[in-house]
Amino acid sequence: MNDLTLEMLAKRVEALEKLLNVTPPPLSPASAKDWRSAVGMFTGNEFMKQIDAEGQAIRQQDREDARKEFGG
Image (cartoon, rainbow, N blue to C red; front, side, top):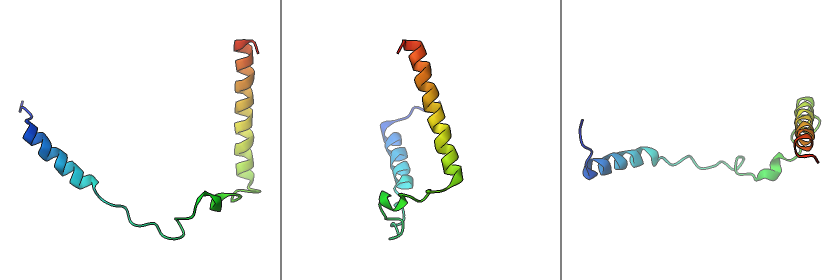
C-alpha cells in the first residue's frame, strides 16, 4: 500500500478544493425575496390543513405520553 505523503495529500486537497470551488449562479430577483413572501401561500389549502391537524395530533399524543411517563 502506498504511503500518503504530506505533498500527495496537499495535491489531493488542492484538487478537491478546485472541484468544490464552483460558485452558484447569482440569485434572480424573484428568488431573492425574503421569507415574508411565503406567508399565507397555503391559506385554505386542504392538504396543508390535514398536515397541520396530523402534526397537532402527534404533539398532543407526545404530551399525553410524557404526562403518563413523568406523572404530570
